[in-house]
Amino acid sequence: MYVRDTIAAISTPVGEGGIGIVRISGPSSLAIAHSIFKMKSDGGLKSHRFSYGEIVVPATGDVLDESMAVYMKAPNSYTREDVVEIQCHGGTLVVSKILSLVVGEGARLAEPGEFTKRAFLNGRIDLVQAEAIMDVIASKTDASLSLAQHQREGLLSKRIETVKEGILYALAYVEALVDFPEDDVDVAVDTDVLARVRPALDELDALISGFEEGRVIRDGVSVVIAGKPNVGKSSLLNTLLKEKRAIVTAVPGTTRDLIEEVVNINGLPVKLLDTAGIRDSEDQVEQEGVRLTLERIPRADLVLFVVDGSGAFTEEDAAILEAVGTKPMIAVVNKGDLPTVAVLPDSIHAVAVSISTATGSGIPELRKAIADAFMHGKAVDGREFVAVSKARHRDALLKSRFSLETFIGNLEAGFTMELLAIDLRDALAAVGEVTGETTADDVLDRIFSSFCIGK
Ligand code: GDP
Image: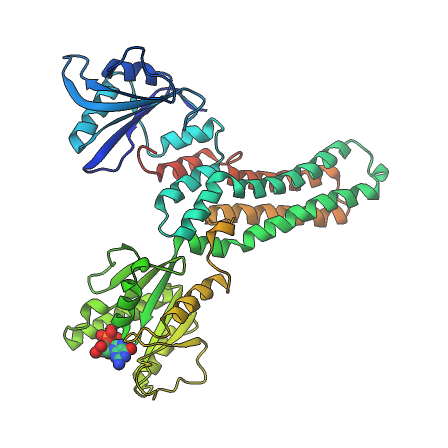
């Protein structure tokens, strides 16, 4: 477990804002709060009530700020410990001064994610839920937010729990039979055990096969807009960005010459990459941009190969097409408002969508084609979506599936109960790595240290 000391951190983002919050958790939270927070009314902080008062420097009696404080008595708090949250004016200096007072009164500065780690260690949430809290904070689209919220609420944990129950049922049987002579074991028992293990295996399969979509919704995808100069790549980027619902956030390009934006395409966070920033520059620079785009193709999840439908399909187009290779691709035939001249080669392995960035025609179809490329026609609708979205989870579930399949094979091959129990325990341990029961300490440390301070 952990040292049950009292930790504190600033829980609001760095910078100036309307309100700043210092959060304290641990056995001394209330005492520390009372030593610096002077209430306007008597009687001290009451659990789950907001109180109005002032932050006073204990050594001098100076008033530092006007403040509201809320005390959440254990176990009804985020960490299941006594928690006090002090709200003050959101200035960088005033918030950090209050944190210093709290530390001066005996709290220790919290590590990143330490509040959530305590919630996990105290059994309020499992590891899937703890990790989902970070996803809630990081979510950029409605779909990724509802996926994260479902995981935070425990819906994914519940599905994993049914897998665990199937394995445990089988394990109980097998362990009970360890001491019986092999010949006495009834065939019906095997059938019964298999009847419990197979649904667990099916659920594992379903969870594993949902990973790609879960990952895409959580992490987004990388899409490169490729095409020779003047086909309308920048116009396409701008069209996709211009629709208000589209803009999520701007991510600085990895190089000066590339424009990279995250847009919301039918619910998917899509990182769009274009060389638009260099389009009015010297030819040489344009060439450099094309080179950079081509370089990015291997790392992209999807390529939008833009051609000018009003002109002939040229060797330059063919060269880019060749560079795209076998990458998933959508052929975007632009300038559909003009008479069509371009003929795409028959060999092209892609859905073709005709658009005009000038009139906006075909853009909804293109958006749908992009989403379909990842969601296989399924709507990116987080409301119904309970899925595995982290590689760590998927890998552990794969391990569990492998052990369960081994178990079934070994059961059918008539292995001893001792050996069968090992397979089942392995399967169980792998599932437990997801929910946190059997996760190694260094893995836990790594997970929580990627959280923000104050969370
Ligand atoms: P890029 O070099 O591939 O990024 O191409 P741009 O987006 O800069 O567009 C090149 C030229 O084509 C510009 O003059 C645009 O106005 C024009 N253009 C882009 N899209 C369309 C379209 O759908 N229809 C027409 N008629 N012109 C377009």
